[in-house]
Amino acid sequence: MNTNKIAWVTDIHLNFLKTTAREQFYKRVTETGADKILITGDIAEATDICELLNEFNQYTDKPIYFVLGNHDYYRSRVTHVREKINALCKQNHMLVWLGKPEIVTLSDDTVLLGHDGWADARYGDFDHSSVTLNDSRLIAELYQAFLLSKSALKHEMQKLADEDAEILQQTLAKAIATNIKQVIIATHVPPFPECSWHKDHPSDNDWLPFFASKATGDVLMTAAKKHTNIQFLVLCGHTHTATSINLLDNLKIRAGGAEYYQPEVQDIIIV
Image (cartoon, rainbow, N blue to C red; front, side, top):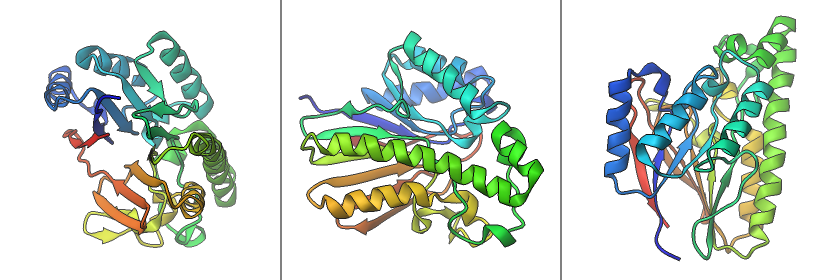
């Protein structure tokens, strides 16, 4: 197969930008010479994500593979957003939501897959944390739980995380069964505390419950330990702080850096 050049972007928050600024960003992506685009979440908000994904694709004329971040569900329900995204991808086959789930063959021995992933309150000290994110105000399922109690919010966070992790595990198992040598996994929330940083320091016990996903991490660590002949590259976002760690010889995790109003290309992944 031919070499694939994938432009990886994350936390681009296109809804914050005016049309001219968005077009300038699309132009920069196109100028990388990449033939595919990968977004690891926080593309926009529920009210305009479909419109902006279509716009991004129409401007670049490249296939766009993506997972959704927490912001992409703002001002709606998780179920409603996913219904809209599924309908969008049926209408525009150059848009591929990896949470369907999808396995994208990139070369004879490399595939791309993933899922949104959710912070699951299993790292850090959720019960004593004073942190409250907009997620519990602007995502209907989390808001309803938040109104009941803190324990109900934790339960709902873990429910969402576990559902995505289970689908990821199933997709990963199918991919591994095809005798691949490398798998690129896209997700939004960092799957390990080691790659969850804020600016120049690791997320602390107050913030970690909302900025790492043990459910996703457990799936990845189990697969990597079992299949040492496969290289696992995990790409994520959410923290807006760039980190890169190797937890195992065959398990590398990269979180993308980001600034509001200044979307950038994180890297060109060549496969």
